[in-house]
Image 1 (cartoon, rainbow, N blue to C red):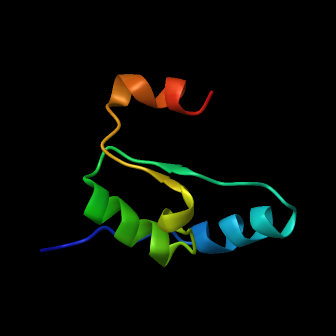
Image 2: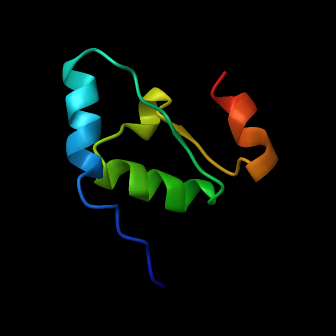
Length: 65
């Protein structure tokens, strides 16, 4: 299976936000396993609620409110 690579600078951007006390959550339409794997590559902690997976495109805006 192939996995998407994180965009250049994404991990550094998330780390900079965390350094400023900003809580980040990744919202993904991917299945939970794929979303959590990507989140870990970005330095996010799925076990701390930093990933929302299997979110439909029309529901993503509502998910971040």
